[in-house]
Length: 331
Image (cartoon, rainbow, N blue to C red; front, top):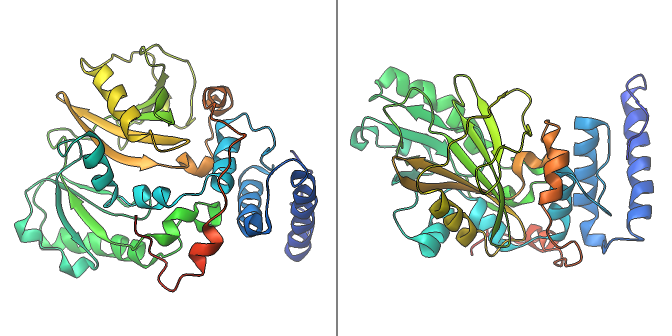
């Protein structure tokens, strides 16, 4: 749904106008969707987010793109398991129970404060990040000096202090994760960049395609391939160079098998994996990739492959979680 531009209108008037447009769309959507009063706050957040980013509202009645389907999932597929598996620490338990203990990066330390990290006990190479957000990862390739360690502190402490990461995008699950720092194995310390990402888009235990990313921190490149490794010719990030030379790893079928095993409990999830010299490791499980705001035109075409059942919905739980005295959710 595309609306007229409001850029020239004063901000208070724009806000009132946007509120009115969202209310109008709610009245339309409630006729066709199982929307309840308990959905309303999240519905408004999602619509303000998509309007801010694209000056459009999502099509929730007949979503076809990846982006619109991610907004649908935020509203109609709320489960506690999404919270558990969005936590970069606790998701390890889920993965280990499902596919075995050697299929996640080794965990060295978890702490609640930066000052608690015991750097002297760490190997020369490691990754340090927080468990409840995105984009805070720091790759450490050589044993850091005290001066370098102090440069990590502001970034990580800011992340720990952010208790509402993703909330303004409708990514409600992060709100219920206790912020912590984790230090884990650096899977490819010989490389000058992070290891290549294999991101499998899965529906209830069935992989649909893989978004392959390499050279993320130097000269990022991407390619979307089907389960036979064939190039689909689509871009999800226009800032990345588009590749066409993907080569399936020797254990490609094993990667697909693992992605499908860990995704079985979810209507949709993206399983983010690495493959280092034949060792497969699950890095994260992502419930709403890019918060449902992919910029590449491929998200419209590839959305047709994200063909989960739109007729089955779960009752909302967000309003119940917000009433709890301790918002951190256990599995």
